Amino acid sequence: MEGITRLALTLVGDYPDHRTKKSGRKKEGHYHYNLNFHRADRWEQTPEQRFRTVMAWGVIGYQPLSAKPRDLLDLFRRQFGFKPDHADFIEWYRANFPQDYSALFR
Image (tube, rainbow, N blue to C red; front, side, top):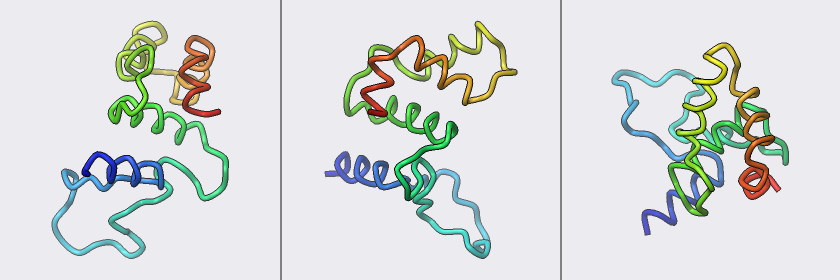
C-alpha cells in the first residue's frame, strides 16, 4: 500500500521528505506538499523537472530502465565535469538512451 501511495504522490507532484524537516515556524507560503516539484500543472516540464523525474524514476523503479539514472549521472560527470547543468544531462540522456527517455516522456 505504501508503494502505491508513494507512486501516486510522485506522479501528482511530490512525495514529502520528512528527513529535511526543520524545527521552528514554517515560512509563509511554504507547504508540506510541493506539488510542482516534479511537474507543473500544464503538460510541459522544465529541464530541471525532467531531471528530477528521471532521478525519481530511478529510485521508484516502477518500470525498469536500461541503466540506473544515478550511475548515468556519475558517468556524465566523469566525462564532462561539473560545469554542464541538468539540462545538458537531459539532452545527453535523450541522445544516448532514447528508449528510456521515450518511456519516461512520451
